[in-house]
Amino acid sequence: MGWNSWNTFGCDINEQLIRDTADAMVSSGMAAAGYEYVVIDDCWFDPQRAADGSLRAHPERFPSGIKALADYVHGKGLKFGIYQVPTELTCAQRGGAYPGATGSLGHEAQDARTFADWGVDYLKYDWCSPEGTLEDQIDAFTLMRDALRDTGREILYSINANSYHPDKNGAKYDWSHIADQWRTTEDIKPVWRTGNPNTYPMGVTDIIDVTEPLRDWAGPGHWNDPDMLEVGVYHVEGFPGLTDTEAAAHFSMWAMLAAPMIAGNDLRSIPDGVHGILTNRAVLAVNQDPLGVAADRVRDDGDLEVWAKPLAGGEVAVALFNRSETAAKITTTAKEVGAPGKRHRVTDLWSGRKWLSHGEISADAPSHGVRLLRLGR
Image (cartoon, rainbow, N blue to C red):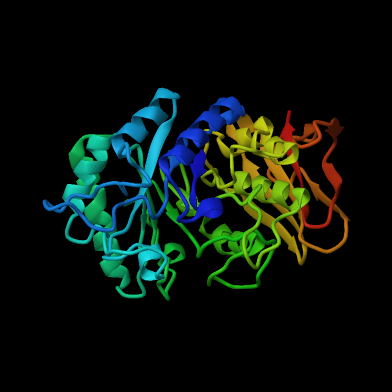
């Protein structure tokens, strides 16, 4: 759980923004809810490496340097993350949004040591190239994995094999022996649906459909990553942003998928509705459940779906998911969702309402919304 700069700020980042974000993560209660990583994405670096080949921070954007920034984040009781790529150009460099060619190709061990020396706790490692076979990607991601391990520092390793690459190999190969988490799709945008199967840009439901069949890859210590959260992300050109109902459904389904919960909104000013979604501890408990099992879509009736996620202690989380344009009642049974026994305590994790079920579970789900339930004995 954490925050990443890209979805709201793109390349428009600097050290004061990151310090303010770390402050806000604590003061807003997000840290208390479990968010801990503060991750700077692309465009943090000087476009030129130093004479010895080492990476360095952009001197104007990050005048105090990355180690000082990491120390500040650590001083807040949080962890610090950074971005790099296994090829020559980062995504922003390849797209012409940022100068230079400072990818890690040929500098893997040097960069890993630099990150460890700076106190980095999380590395986002993004392919950012249309070239390379799956085997090339496996080799490159493995090379950095080994380099990080050789530093002796514990660094969460998050990879993306999809950016700019035509084959979108994140969804075609089980990366669990290489990375702690791996992106399954192209980049998400704040929109309910684009209809793209796995091409840029992706909407919430598009990503769910790509990621659901990969559920068996996920488990403690190795996670499918359906990309960062768009809850509270607005003003993205060409995209309307999610309604609060859609954002709550997005958050609920990421919890059901056992996905990394990486916020992407501006934490310095969080609307009450957005704050309530991001800090809903009952939903986060489903996401962080120690079993680490990703949900199964146990019934698909077109736009109306039933999802079930086994939880520790024999409980089950159930999502009654309504993709349609109108509100609808969705009904399931304890047997269908794998809940043992005939009598269950049902808790609606958004409203807090509780009731007893004797086999049938039914609730009205809003358009583009979800009723997220927890079934106990």
